[in-house]
Length: 239
Image 1 (cartoon, one colour):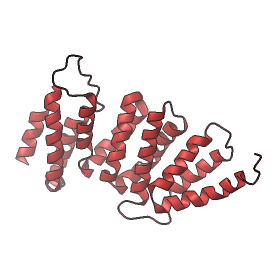
Image 2 (cartoon, rainbow, N blue to C red):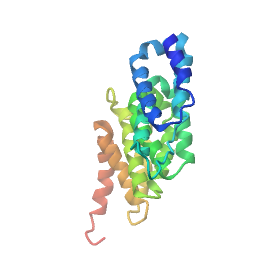
Image 3 (cartoon, rainbow, N blue to C red):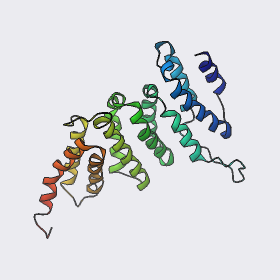
Image 4 (tube, rainbow, N blue to C red):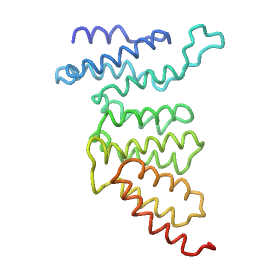
C-alpha cells in the first residue's frame, strides 16, 4: 500500500498528453493487479484516490495542435482513460453518480464519450451497481433515443441500453422471467407503437430491438409483447 499511496501522490496534476497516456496505462494495471489489496477495508481511501486522479480528466477535451509531432489524438486519450474508469468494480460508487451527471449536463462528443464509458463500465461494475442507478440510467437513455439530436448519439445510447439490460438480466447469470425495469420499458414502448405513424414510433421500435439484443429473457419479453401489436398492423393490408 505504501507504493500505491506514493504513486497516487506522484501522478496528481499531470497535463502533458504523452505522460497521461503512460499514466492511464499504469493506472489500469494497478487497479486490476492490486484489486485484492484495494478491496481491503483499510484501503478504501485508495480507491477514491485513484478515482480522483483519473476522473478529473473526464471528459477528455484535448485537441492536438496542427503541427503536433507526437501523434497523440483525443481519441487515444479517451480510450486510455476509459480503460482506467472500467478497470475495477470498486470504482462504481464514485463513478456512477458523476457519469450520470455528465450524461445529463453535456452534449455532442462529451455525451457520446460518457455513453461509451457507461457501456463499457456497467459489465465491470456489476448488477448491484447497475440496479442502484437503473431508473436514472433508463430515463437518460430514453431521452437520447426517443428525442435524438443526431444518429451517432442515438446509436451510442442504444448500445449503452443493451449493455445495461444485459447486466441486469443476462450477465453473469440470466434472470428469467425478467421483472422490474424491462417490463416497464416494454410497456412504455408499446404505448408509443400504438401510433406507428408518429415520430416516436421508429425510435421506440429501436428500444424494443435493444431488449431483443440484450439476452434471451428480455428478447422473449419483447417479442411476445410486440407480436400482438405487429399482427394488428397487418390485419388490414391497405393500412
